[in-house]
Image 1: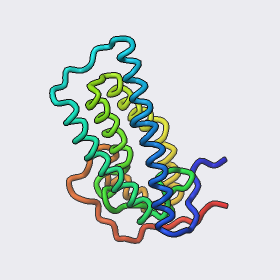
Image 2: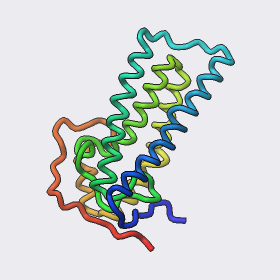
Image 3: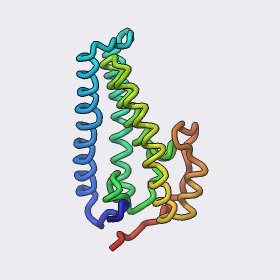
Length: 188
């Protein structure tokens, strides 16, 4: 089975529904179920919590900001890219608008920040470590395959975008696209 499959041609509403369904599943598992399990294990083994003053308020604030970035990024993927964030229904069009003008994978940045925010909320260094391990894992295991796929499908426009827009740290000025991002037909 090919990992990266271009989304079928369908309505924007359908892409948005698929995208938000994916977000509910992924966020529930990776940002609530796993961190709760890690936190419960920490409590079971009496691992001390982090001494973070106002940790719950800071965690909620950081989670809210990161979630807004995640929703904005996913919405751009569905609307501008005409696909979903998942590789099995990947965007038909190279997305270089919205938060993608500042950082190459704002959804990864948002997800990692959400994980760190959950760890901050729980004042749990193991949950924070889990988020950091997730960042390194995404960077080493997922990013190279995703970038190979984007380079293969979009060629020079993606190469130019990749060289102009940083992966992790946002640009100060937005990337200027000519608006003619190439579109891919689904692989059959």
